[in-house]
Image (cartoon, rainbow, N blue to C red; front, side):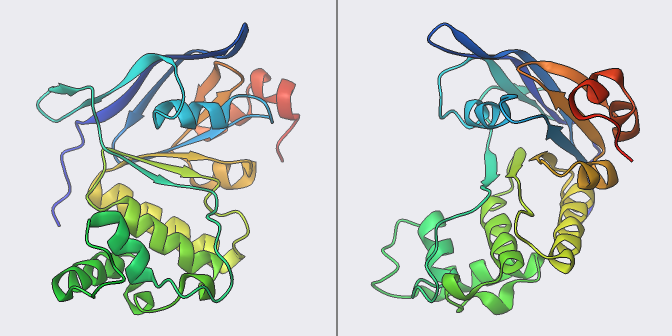
Length: 242
C-alpha cells in the first residue's frame, strides 16, 4: 500500500462542556496530524473521558471537529473509529468474533446464516492485525490482547479519519502491549491515520507518543513527550517523571 502524502489532519476546535454551572472542559483545541499518535494525559477529573464523549457526540458541547483532506477540503462530519477501554463479555459466551464483527458492518441478523462473502471480507480485515485465526473463536475465550486486535480491526473498517483509543492496554501483559504498539505503528505508517490515545500510563506515553496533550479542563501543555514531561505544568500535576 502506498503511503498517503501526509497533508490531511483532524482539528478539534474550541470544545467546551458545561454540566449545570460547572465547566468541565473549556476551549480545548487539538490539532491531530495524520500519521501521528497523540496521547492525552491528565489527572483524574481532568476531563479526559468527557472530551472523548464530546468528540464521539455522546454529550452536548460547544465547538466542533473538522477534517481537512489533502486538497484542503474541510469536512465537518468525519468518520471516527473508537476502541473502548473494555467491553463486557462473559467467559465462554457463544458469540464469535465473526458474529460481533458482522453485526457491526451489516444489517443481516448473524444468527440466521453465515454469509460467505462477509466472512471472507471480515477475515481479510482481521488478517491486517494478525487476528484472522480468531474469526471463529468465542469472544469470551479471547485474551486481552486478542480482543484488542479484534476491536481495532472493527474500528478501522472502513478506514476512519480519526481513531480514538481509550486506555487500550489496560489489563494486557507486556507481550500484548508490545504487539499493540506494533499495530499502532502500522496504522500510522501505512494508513497515515490520525490517532488519539487516552492513557494513565505516563511511561508508555513517553515511549510511544509523537505528541502529548496535558489536559486539565483545558489544554495546559502540548508538544513532544520530552518537552511536556519536563515542563513546569507537568511537574505541578505529577511531579518528576524519571
